[in-house]
Image (cartoon, rainbow, N blue to C red; front, side, top):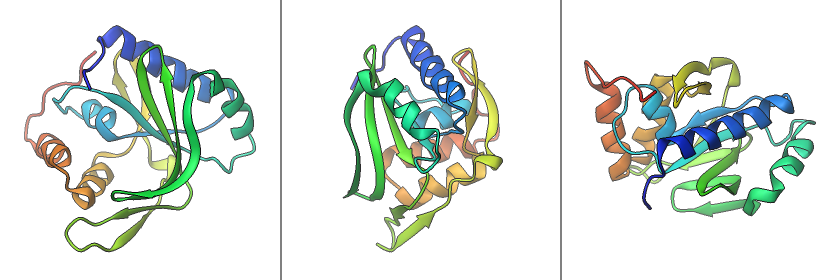
Length: 170
């Protein structure tokens, strides 16, 4: 999948975080965008985030994003993931939102399923693509990516642990 121009990525990011704010829902960006916000260097292909699906405001948020819904929400066990999530496509930008409740990731090294806890209180505000966003803390992101240990995660870990990472793109 080819990365979209940064202007399109920024528009989608502003839309999804703005819609969350309109519905008073916390979110935590994870995945590649969180890595980029901490100085990672690889191209951004999608926007991954967690939200509390059990929150009373979730239904209104889901109604607001439904025109862009391409799949879910569904609970799946696929690859190294056991979670509930949905997929959106906003003007060409892929966005995946996982439920913050009941997430397990399979440890690639051991095969064990490891429960994950998304704590919105620990989110760090970072500036990326011209927006201030709430992202997974760096140490938690590294631990998360160590469990997955896919090739892309190993690249992200290297970037995150670098002494002088590149500044995040504006």
